[in-house]
Length: 161
Image 1 (tube, one colour):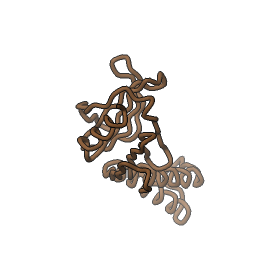
Image 2: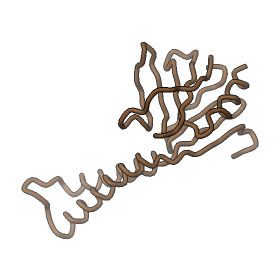
Image 3: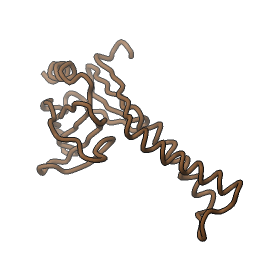
């Protein structure tokens, strides 16, 4: 955390890590099996495809295992690995608690339309969420997870005003 950072936290996403790890191990097994033992089934996928899926799920496992939330005097950002969303405080109208229920597979990065508003979510399961109302027309709402909603809410409100 540099001296310009007001707040930073890292949230471990246990469920997405478990799910992606299962697929990573599955495709590793299938790739190794096909290389050393032979094709499985009557119409096997090419070995390079299995290897490609292994690399893809390995990337997803590492990329979506930790969400980072960061507040500075200039912006708020949330990221899952290389996928980052940053919003300047000038583009924020308000910040409130989000009491939406967690849907099945409703974590990670989501784009959706809710109550006529386009929203972007960076969330981790079983973690409180905050909702930022944006002035920008690209997304009207930005929802993100935090372990310390009261502290982040207080800091966000100070930065907005």
